Length: 127
Image (cartoon, rainbow, N blue to C red):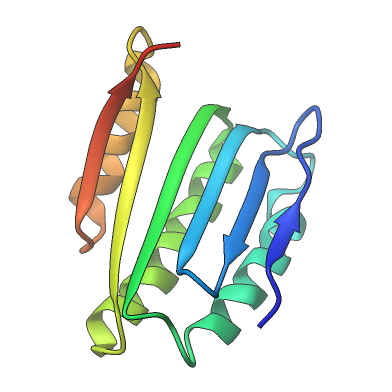
């Protein structure tokens, strides 16, 4: 399965999903004009990955800002990962990173952690 690499834009995050090692990464800003359209290739890739996931999958999210429509898309992404995790095909962990002075991103991570049923770590990083 090919890697999914979406280069960062002014309003879009850098996405690197690597099936070979079960490493998924989203980093940067997520304020695209059309979030659903932007995240569609991500969902498609995850649907394919879900058929034969690695034993361990790690999603690392390091966003400095995201808009409301992106937050819904992130939730949809977490739901897809939940399905992999609950199916018994592989374990999925989420690492949510936030800069030490960014309470909004930290609280967003807390919110997702309470909503989704995935092992979820929230880690402070120094900017």
